Amino acid sequence: MTEFLAARREYQPRGPLTLVELENSGLVTGQAITMDDRVTALFPRTSGQSVLRLTRGTGTTLSRQTPLRVGCVFSGGQAPGGHNVVAGIFEGIRRVHRDSTLIGFVGGPSGILKNQNIEITPELMRAYRNTGGFDLLGTGRTKLESAEDFATCARVFAQHKLDAFVIIGGDDSNTNAAFLSEYLRKSGSNTCVTGVPKTIDSDLRGPWTETSFGFDTAVRVYSELIANIAKDALSGKKYYHFIRLMGRSASHITLEAALQTHPNVALISEEIARDGKSMREIVDDLARVIAARAAAGLNHGIVLVPEGLIEFVPEIRALIDDLNDVIATHKDYLDSLRGFTAQIEYLAGRLKRESAGTLAALPLDIQRQLIMDRDPHGNVALSRIETEKLLIELLAIRLGEMKSEGHYHGKFAWQTHFLGYEGRCAAPTNFDANYSWCLGLTAAALAAGGHTGYLATVHGLTNPVETWQAVGVPLVSMLTMERRKGKDKAVIRKTLVDLNGQAFQRLATLRDEWASRDDYRFTGPIQYFGPATLVDRVPLSLFSNNTCAVE
Image (cartoon, rainbow, N blue to C red):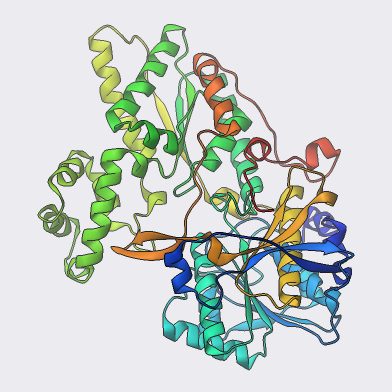
C-alpha cells in the first residue's frame, strides 16, 4: 500500500441518480433496432429485443425480494477501470438486495471452463477500487465458441445458481457473449448474459456506445510520454522520433494522442485506406515533410504511427487477406514445417502473384513477423510488426535519393518507440473511474431486470456525470457478417475512425501547421487530485465524435 493507493482508494466514483440509487430505478423499453436478416436467423431466441433505458418514476423498480447471484469475468487485454466495473456490479446487485452475491471467475474465460472462482467481498472490493489492472481476477484470451464450451458454461452457471453472468471484454468477447446468451436460452438455462465494452482501442464506439472504458486513461499515459519525447526532441534537435501506438485496427488512440500533443506527423490508417496510398506514397509524403523542415533548419520531429497501419496499405492489406486464407487452409501442414525459410517457400507457391510479389519486396524481418507471429484468433500479430522501422528503412533510402538529386540537404537520424503496454494497467482517470463504475451498475440493472443478450452502455459522456444515461443495447443488433479464417461469421465489427467526423477534420485542418513548425502540446501527467479542470477532463475526440444514435 502506497500513499497514492491509500488516497485513491477513498475516491468515490460518481454517476447519475438512476444508477447511484439503483433500487429506486426501473428499465423501460425504447426503440427497436433493425438487424441483418442473416444474423437474425442465427439468433432466433435473442433477436428482436429493443433498447432498454434506466429511468426513475416508472412505477416498477429493480428492488428485489430475493437476492441475486451473479458471475463476472475479464476477457482479453487489460484496460484501466476494470476493477471499477466489478465494483459497480457488486454494489449494484447489493443495492437491489443486500444479500446478493458476486462470483468472479479467475484467469479469464478459461476460469469458467475450469470452474475456478472466488466470491467478491466488501473487503476485497475496497482493496481494488479505483486501481488499474485486472489482477483481482486475472484475464485471458480463451474463446468460448464451441458447443462443448457453452455446455460447460451452462453446467458451471447452474452449479453456482447464477441469475446472470457479465463478460467484461472487447468486440470478440462481446460477440461470444451474444452466442452464449443464445445458447443458454436454447438449452433452457435461466442465466442471463450481459456484456461490458472494454478496450483501450475504443473500437466499440459507434451507434451503440460512445467509447469503451480504459481509452481515456491509456491515451493520457501515452500523451504524457509523447510530450516528454517532444521536449527531448526540442532540446537535442537531432532526432526524428517515430512512435508506434497500440490499436490493432482502428486509429482512435493515434487520433486522440495527436489532438492532445500536436506531433509533426500523425498517420491515420483509415485515411491511408480511403486514399488508396501505397507504401511508397506514404514514404514520399513523410520525406517531403522532413525535407521541408530541414530547409527551415529543423532536423528533428515527432511522427505518430498507428499499430495497425500496415494492414491498411492496399497492397499489404491484400497480402494479409491472402495470407489469412492460405494459412487457415494449410495451417496443420505449415505448423509441421520447421523454420521460416521452409514456411515462406511453401506459401510463395500458394499466394496470388501480386501478394507473393509484395511479400518478397518487404524486408526479411517484416516477412518473418507476418508469417511467424499470429494472434490467438489467427490474425497477424500487429503489435509485433515494427512498422516504424519499416518506414525508417524506406525513408532512409528515399531521402538518400532526394539528397543525390539536390532536393534534400538535412540530416536524418532517428529513434523508435512503441507505446502500448505502458497504458493498459494505469490507475484510471476520474473519467474512466466514473464511467467504468457506471457500466458495472448498468450491468447490475440488466441482471436485476432479468434481461439477457445486452451490452451495458452509458450515454451522454461529454455532459456532467450526474446527467449520464444508462442504456442496454441488444448484442445481436451489433452483429454483422464478416469473413474470418476463410468463413463468414457473425461478429461485432470494429468501429474505425470516422474521416467525416469533427475530430479527424480538426486534425486535417491543423496538420500542415504542425508539420512546418514545432507546436507541441504538453499535457502533463494524469491528475487525480486538484481542481476539476485538471481531474475531470474528457477525451477531446469524444466531444466532436459523439455519434451514438441509440435513443
